[in-house]
Image (cartoon, rainbow, N blue to C red; front, side, top):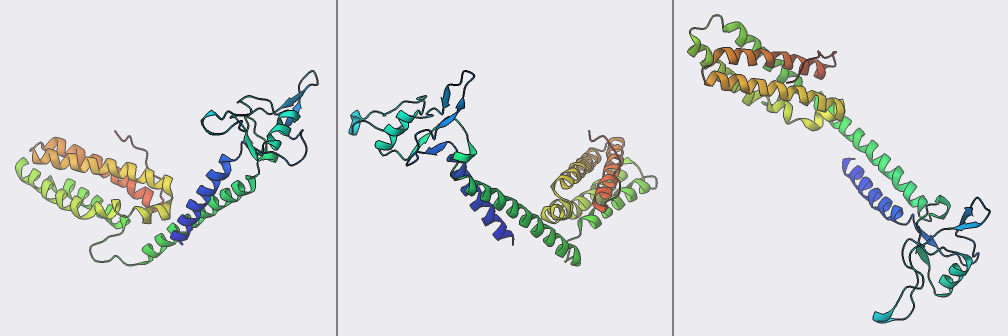
Length: 263
């Protein structure tokens, strides 16, 4: 389904671009020299479309010149001369749906793009449902479980800090446990983009990854501070990471998220 959707989108896009390019290319009618009249002005004089590019050709080879230059009004006399010269279409500066011969193709392309977008969304949603129905395979966790386990690691570390020895031992525990958690659990969230987008939609997914990325930065800052034996700074970053992971878990489970500054 996804391949069909992409093919439909690309074909529709190509057709739409070609059809749009013909919006200002008006046909010279076989009869009816007033076909390019747009209306009348305030004084009742007829107003005609004007050329947006030179039309027709006089002469051959290098010395050939346009029959009519840009900005020439397409009066009945000019239209008759262009028809006699064998010109089939001219580029004008006016837009008129009734003269847009490729409009049906453009409308069909729009319908095709919409259908392709719907098929893509349905395919992503189906893939997400299938992924959610499967049990975790090997070491691959669901995003919900990964975030929950990250929160558990952070809570356990904060609770254990009061029972650890000196600052050196505490920092060693933080670097070891945070390093392992980040290595094992963070990829379970960031590497399942299609699954999350299919389930949540692109906007909510972007909001989730915004707060999750902030939590990951706080985890990295905590690990880095602990590696430098700056325990207080490490604990502060660890607490901040816990708050942001809570928001990420709320977004994943559909609960009302807390509002936190993401500085």
